[in-house]
Length: 301
Image (cartoon, rainbow, N blue to C red; front, side, top):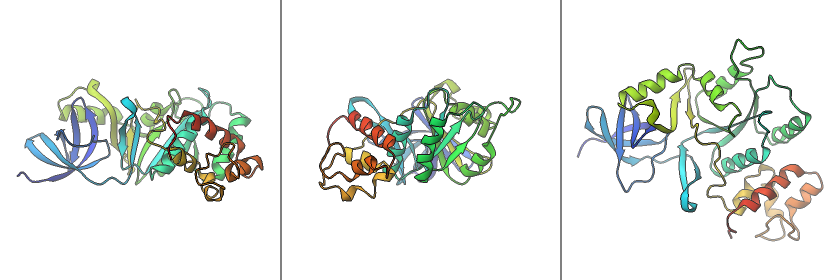
């Protein structure tokens, strides 16, 4: 049997997978019975031609981000992520329900989360600032940036600080369309097109075939996974109890509810609801939890 070689999955290219191994990029196929390989996966592969190979095994993952797929199933977005940076902005409308959804997923997936307020060159509202205080009090880091062109007045605010945080970890940007994820990514990965073209040229695939996430090595250190097609993770694979656990301020209260199967709605002796009513935790966050809870497809025990 051919020797097993360790590699890093950096992109999906049509039916092929680009695997970085040493200083080379190899176009690999996978075994049919294998789980779906994700960008960020560390794998073992065997060589079948000078620039081609086959993935034989996915090495253990420390984290996995998934999104809803067909028939109630989930599909991997990226693996071995350290931090999800949730990007949002004044324009379009700031969707705090979506932000809470991202954070709830991260709390349950062994992934750190941070918030990135983009377009800070635009006027900010008191409503947004009040909401940000809730996240700040929960120890979620908040970075304020503007990824507009450097020639634009007020452009590139806060990017150096954000770059320093991205160093020495694997990160991904998430957020609704229009918040400036692409501009932010392009500002941080200065030679993104050069790197993308290099991957495409080595694997003999045109850029148009790149259909999913791509992992880029940052000049300052660390990796950034760019996944332009994934705006929403959904509540992929989360149960109702996990959704409640996904609200960081609920965690110390969950064992204080009178009933083990408390749904934190109108249940008798619900410590979470009482805390929200008493102002001990954010009422607006609690109300958003109830909205997300209504989206749960089924009730889990």
